[in-house]
Image (cartoon, rainbow, N blue to C red; front, side, top):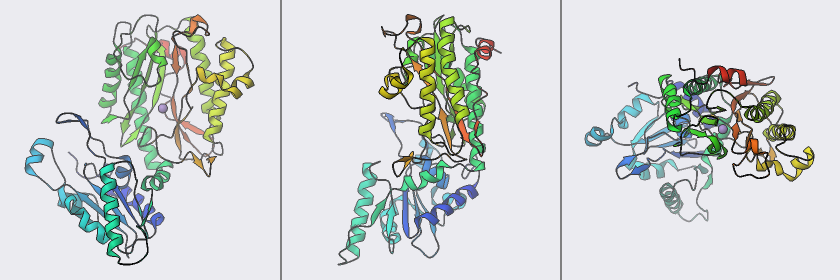
Length: 442
Ligand SMILES: [Mn+2]
């Protein structure tokens, strides 16, 4: 096992440096993600909170990161679990106080059980604290209790407790614009994700089960160096593809159906997010091809539309207009395009947004609006472009040829100086490319 943070301490130090400048005379406090119980004494696989990872690279649960800008020199302080031979025998290695100090570049490291005492000292002279409320009740109790003690310790001041600002919003704005190094990691996550989709396509054939296709896709992720998934994979055959967040993945692929896979690998804590839809038997029927190409045209036009100065709201409006045009073209809807847009009746078949921020979290941090206005796109922002059409199997209004078909095509794009870069183009999406690879096990 390689010790220390992924990629070395320097990158985390630079991020903290930027944050110190923003928090001025405040104290910033952030808890590690708690472990989650699956059943009895079995835990879900542990993954660190993205914001805590972003600032420290520290991978363990039950840690707290404190950044103090109220001191003469800014301090980076970590509270961590003590080493414990018995617990380590059962649950594995811990850095402990000494190891954390050695590998993570902290100015000071304390055992987590000393947090209450030390934190009160750290609050001296602070003007406010940065903390995310309402994410974890126990953490809230601890912090609010300490703020009350801090207030009492000031004697009669007529002041209330210190002001609380949100910790994750301030870092979220930093995380939204990715550095060249971050883009490099993200590009790799997207490459690996595309390779997983390609492997799944090659293996797809009637008779397999959704969870088997899932396993092939995820095995390729892992074999290419992805430690874990960016999110739970969605593999839906036939009408299962019309369920947006289908999670059962336990149905059998049948000849003549379309298959939808929404899956992404994580690399260096960055997540890919790709969706592809294609015929189980490797050959589009005429109807499948018509509805597929309707979404494909809208999706490609929307990727081309992305450039700095536009807003995500513009991207969504553009995608929606293209999808409506295409629905009218293939006869999925009838009527006037503008009227459909205005009364939102397209939402019956295209019910979700076109994009979300993408980064260390698949639905990444960063404001979507500033002062109530959709924000302007800038180089270094990354998001998904994922229009879709979903026709319920029992929809009497839709032409029968399209019933029970769900199509989503999703790529991940970076805003560049002049336009955008599509990071997931290696996952085939053209009809001819798909027909070439489906079922062709290497
Ligand atoms: Mn997505």
